[in-house]
Length: 126
Image (cartoon, rainbow, N blue to C red; front, side, top):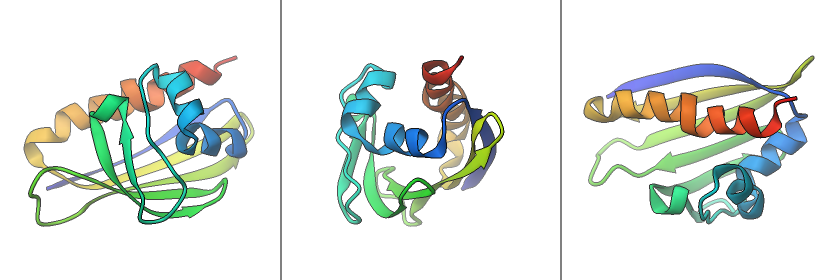
C-alpha cells in the first residue's frame, strides 16, 4: 500500500473550492460527468459516472473533506483527506490519499494531478 500527498493551488476562495468538491451540480459542471455527492457523514458518493465510489466520513465546511475510497475487497481503508487553506492566489489544497493499492498507485497519481485537480484548476483559472 502506498500514500500520496500533494498541494495544489486553485484560483478561487476556499468556500468556492469546497462547493466544487461537495455539491453534485458543481461537481458535474467541472468534471463533465454525472456525480452523486452529499455532505452527510456516512453517505455514499460516486464521481465520474461511477469511476470513483466511496463513503463520506466527515466534513468541516469550507475547510476539510474526509472520504473512504473503495478498492474492492481491500482490508485497509483507503482514506482521502482534502484540506483547504486560504492562499494569496485563492486556495491551497492539501491532498493526502492513504492505502492506495500498489498496482493502482501510478493511475491514481495521474488521476489526481490531471483529471481531478487538473480539471478543477482549469475550471477556476483566471
